[in-house]
Image 1: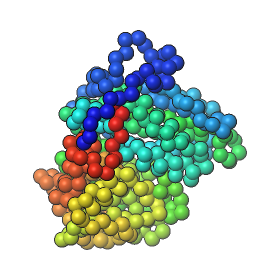
Image 2: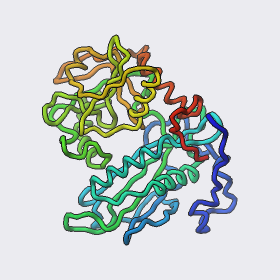
Image 3: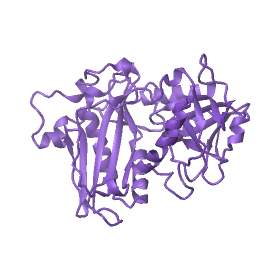
Length: 378
């Protein structure tokens, strides 16, 4: 996995430069996993860490950014993020690894995706070096909250970009605030890969319009899903699966993750193609790993009828938070359908098990990072 790289000393971070770091603070790499956290009980839920990172774009330029030890931000009451939804975000993880260090997984791709989201909402995106610096400094400053290697957890990183300047007329802001927060996390869905989940195929709600903002990671997409997702949970399904808004025929994606499937009797990884789908970095990584296995990777329109008709041996949700969550059955128009070979005893099929193990091994530096996805922080 490569030689260990000595981490940049904490004295180079802006918090230390401004003289705000308390005396006696030990080097962050010696603090990995030392926070008072019940690592074995971690879920995907908010657990406060110590610091977040803030930078501001104003008068045509970005500030250098700083670490802040308060979980609150000051916003003008007329900020465009509050009134007109100028807000986008990202999600990535930092992992304790087999070499004793901590690495971010593909932060460059998250930076590029935030850039695309910002441009769609007429926002000023943080430049790549600022995006990466914010992620690095948050990991270093919160090293104690990085789950130890043996726990299988991760430090979840949430970069956030909001319009923070005052506007009452509908127009882009003249100020933007870039924030990076972090928290230790476990599985997104209860049970993780130890148990498959069921899904409700959403009826009566659309996630995104064909020429809307479905392909961008903007806050409004998730707010629009809350009601339908809540109805699905009342029906007993942890996830909701959306069809295309135009024909209600083709699969778009789950509420918070991409749809992936493996075709019966064929070495073929299938994932939907649609202008309304957010490109998942986990999905892109799994596609590369599938190609490494010599399997065919196909992105195409996927009809819900194919899923209900049993075309696939393995069906799952994938994303940064969920990694891979196998799906066993779906509810479609008040009827239940078995859609894969997943069972409680054998939740994940051979193909997705292989990809899951390979991805996790790379993220934790237990296997060679042949694609250069890891970025060493500590």
